[in-house]
Image 1 (cartoon, rainbow, N blue to C red):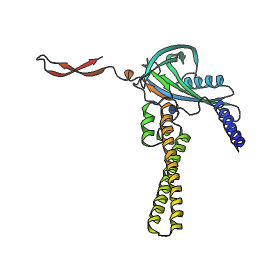
Image 2 (image 1 turned 180 degrees about the vertical axis):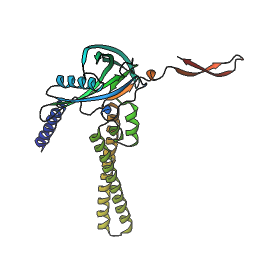
Image 3 (image 1 turned 60 degrees about the vertical axis):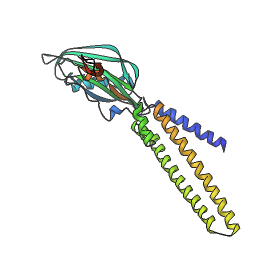
Image 4 (image 1 turned 90 degrees about the horizontal axis):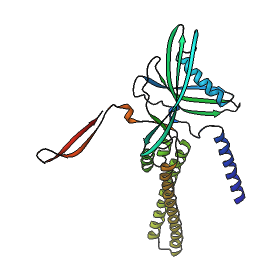
Length: 296
């Protein structure tokens, strides 16, 4: 029995590793389902997809598709210059500092005698290898409006959710995992919790039923039988409570430490040109008051 269990676990481990090798991440990023909102109208977020024999070819096709959708490489193109650069910045997410390196690009082109310019940044990508061996790639870009200088947001991609997943799982076990994109794990935790709660209620009802039967009968043999069954259901109830507690603790720990689907976090400072704070202060007559400080 033990050898069969170990063999089954080994098969599951091999299958998991094989499945992980066929994709860039075990959970699809959140931006594949919902694009972030830009902070201003000088740019917008866009995804491009491509299918190619290799990841390198797919990346080239995604970039080419981005240019084509912007109106480049159409008609008569006399001149086209591509420039790339990297920029580093730090962004605080859930109290932790994240160092981010972004790949910026700019394109200067002449289309039908008119000079046009496009600027953008590659933010993230997700790829899967299909059964035919080809790579299916989805890339997230931030792209400027043509001939407009963009004011890109400072962003970071992260798989951490902090308290956003924790408080959900604290209220409903599995909810935090579902929120983080781990649908299978969240469904198992939620379904397992419901099943254990149901088993606990059943065990306690049966325990109470046999406890009542003991009080109603005067036959010694029946009392012993009912007492044995009451004790068995009491033990079963206690085991269910232990399993429920262990499952809840695991659910909380997993909601804190386990990574979820990659998400885009935008620096809030890039969405506003000012900030303010209200602090205690002493007025001219030495009475206590409040002072507002505004920073532009």
